[in-house]
Image (cartoon, rainbow, N blue to C red; front, top):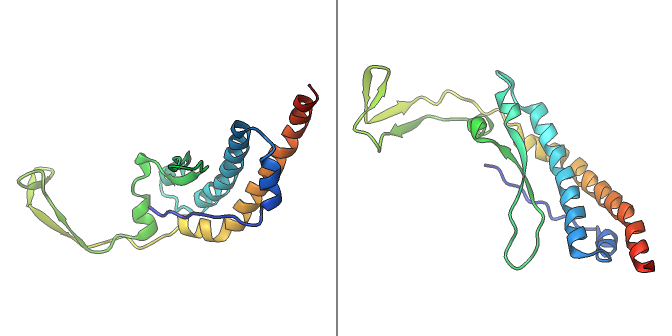
Length: 166
């Protein structure tokens, strides 16, 4: 699986503006902004995915990442569902390789016993769609993050002002 991390710098003013909100609200604003950036990459990957049945494009999803120990990190991953597992083969290709049978005595295809290993010819050439989506749309994803941060901050400023007045 391809994994790319973006450390966005230059958002100092937005970071300062976020700090005036309670932690829970900061996380919500950050989560919405980060998801907006991930959706840009998802949309691009779907558009670039080779189409045979349409299952690969349907299997490109955005999922929340995990928290890191000692700090709160908002992460989203654009990846493939279990049903679209073969997307990594499409992305990276499948060269010649040996398939070894470890859980059974022999591999069968239909009624024919094939043996304990198969020399697969490697019939799939690379057709990248995830990496080009990241490479070509990273700037748009960062812009989407920035715009969503601004939107979240501006939306919640009146709420904070009302709480200060109370």
